[in-house]
Image 1 (cartoon, helix red, strand yellow):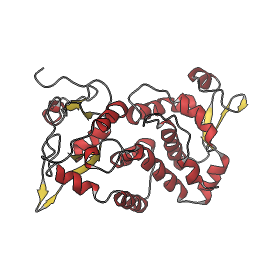
Image 2 (cartoon, one colour):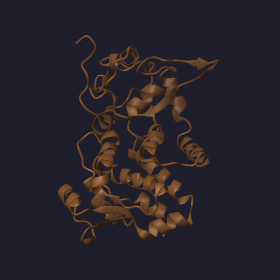
Image 3 (cartoon, one colour):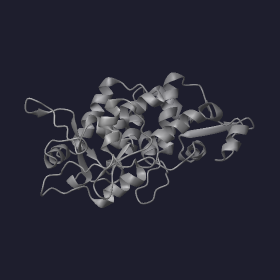
Image 4 (cartoon, rainbow, N blue to C red):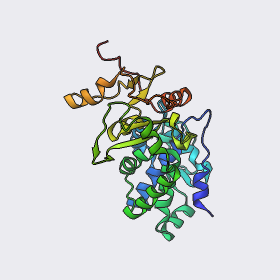
Length: 297
């Protein structure tokens, strides 16, 4: 049995490039718990709040419930659920999962494979991360679910990601003249730009092309906030800042909150600005909450 193929083929709700990372997030969480204690099941009432936080932080903007993946992942051959009455999930209803003592865990065959092949867990985790989340979020997601990936494995995986679109970074940074499109940061060490990255607006895993009109040159801070849905780009190419972001320090106000309503810095004349369909995807699938009014409004 090829577990990587099975993981890559998880059945998910999909329409018009919509994000539905519910099952991947549950699997990543289960892998983290397996590392901690391979024999312990995950009782729904004990992990519900953890899973809800993961969905709120890394899931789509609309409200959702961890009950959905807890039940439906059983159809993919990698997850099983038992209740106080015996094997089998009671359904995707939150009340049913709570009242029946529903407990989930990886299937016996998958647990056995993970014990036989020490590197399989890392390969599955890296596949889930790469298929469903941008690279800027991989490290903190592993920390959030308690996954400890070997540094050497993480380095090999990062190298594979870089080979995926070798020209994307240079093309995007050139188009934006090596300046962050949000704050204008243009730091260098000698002739080498430092802290500047090429961000995909529509994520690569969701059909986002490696083209200039799907990219932004962003500093490391604003890239992370863009991928977490704190920052966005409006129809008028002005910066959106989510009301979910809270910061009281002068630095937080200056570097994030004050960006609301500002026009993007770049791209230079002749370079393609962010395409409307990619801005729209990010607004629907990544940006969380309502945008703040522009400064001074």
